[in-house]
Amino acid sequence: MQTLRASKCGLSTAQLPSSILDVIDALTKAGYEAYIVGGGVRDLMLGHAPKDFDAVTNATPAQVKEVFGRRCRIIGRRFELAHVYSGRELIEVATFRAPPKKAVTSAAGMILRDNNWGTIEQDFARRDFSINAMYYQPRKGEVLDFCHAVDDIKHKTLRLLGDPQLRFEEDPVRMLRTLRFAAKLNFNIDEKILDVFTPELTLLLRDVSPHRLYDESQKLFTMGHLNRVLPMLIDFGIWHQLFADIKPEVTPFIELAAKNTDQRISIGKTINPAFFYAVLLWIPFQERCSFYLNKGMVAAEARAQAGLDVLKRQATRTIIPRFAETFIREVWEMQTRLLNPKPQQIEALSGHARFRAGFDFLLLREKSGDTTTQGMGLWWEEYQHMSTDEKERAISQYNRQRAKGRRKAAHDDAEVKVSAAQQVDIEPLVNEPESRGRRQRKPKNHSAAPTVSIVAASARGEIGSDHPILKRKRVKRDLTQVVFGPTQ
Image (tube, rainbow, N blue to C red; front, side, top):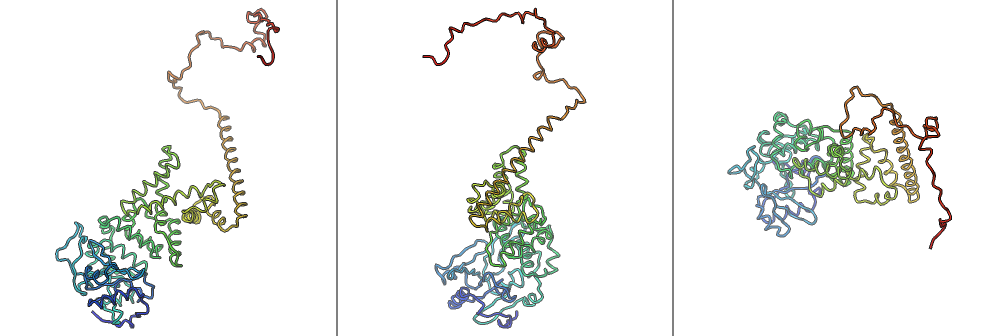
């Protein structure tokens, strides 16, 4: 172990928020050791803005709760932690952990219970990556480095502590963390990790809870380097363990959506992680819709059932929360409404709660080369920047074009029917007898002479004047007995 000066590592208390200092000071005042550890220290040394800060102490979760009282909440079963609220900020406080006295693991070797308290040296040995194993005491101005992690940061190397095979078996989620850190920090993965990181090893992720995998997938989507990590998920065989029916391919639509997500994060805009799930599952959703439409199902019912099927299938990998599933299905449903809106509903549609998400989805489809959008993505984009009068003119023009399109479609259908009627019937190669029910009944008169219209026969002179039908007497009516007009 080496003790480094914080200033030499580029660290100072001025970089820290008051919330983490409040937690460190309260634990120290109560007589416990307390350090800042993990990604917060690493990001500060790399010159990045940390997303959050975690603390570690020799106080047990129960003792931490005694220090902070109602501000503290103990969570976790497999890995017990204390959540301390300082103002609006949440600080995660963990206790030094020792190797388990009796290993409680699954058949694949994954640790199921990990609540054995220990010393800081034992806690260091339990951590996964060297760059996350530096302990920073801000009040003393010291950094404890047990494994030359500072050198790994300088050389931009991602290294696991201990045997990589064993560490992955203890917690398979570390495979996802490896790719996430490599993409986020642009670090090189250590050769020892690459030697054991095989598609066969990724099957261990099947033992991880689908709820936890969903949380990890959200971290991948929101780290700001989604476009960089997607090819890595395919190359290392992780894709099939996260996504059920999605082909392992970064399509133009997925790539554009990933870039758009990263850009929004880089400029500080909020994102909904469920939106990228809607992008990933779009093709399976369309395929399922076609399946039900071919069965003769109504379009609206086909879309509803297809959405349920696709999300249920994805739940075998990552269980998407109910509110996120609702969001995804509403975004898909908005595509139909935005492609062919009724003129009188355009204004109301632009104020719909899911309009923005549905529009972004439609525009990304259009920009990625999807021709089925019919240019409506650009139309809606221009519509949002128009004045009230311009919107009215745009709706009127859209209505005329829509009516023109319907007339053209009706004309084309009529031409198709006429051309079909003009086609010459082709005599079948084999004359098969018709079924009994479809045969025409034979006339009672079996004469071979065909029935001829009497009028036509008379005109041709085939019926003489002495024919009985022409000698029929006409009865003359007495019109004097007929009352014309209204009667009483």
